[in-house]
Image (cartoon, rainbow, N blue to C red):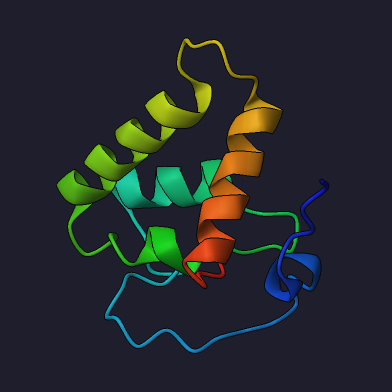
Length: 97
């Protein structure tokens, strides 16, 4: 069985308003600015799930360390398979990230 990603993944142009206070891309400095630059997406921006942690750089650092360990750390699963699992779990949870 081949799973298809939810519509939000197919249409990344969908913009949702972020209600959590965050550091905007043009106001970011230091570690937050470095993270934003390193993960800028093909559509030219940074995902809101990352921006949500921006007011607390140490929390952002912990989240990025965890994410990089899960997605890019040593393990038997390829990155492609890890991404398929992440998309499937997000779809099941009705999460558009």
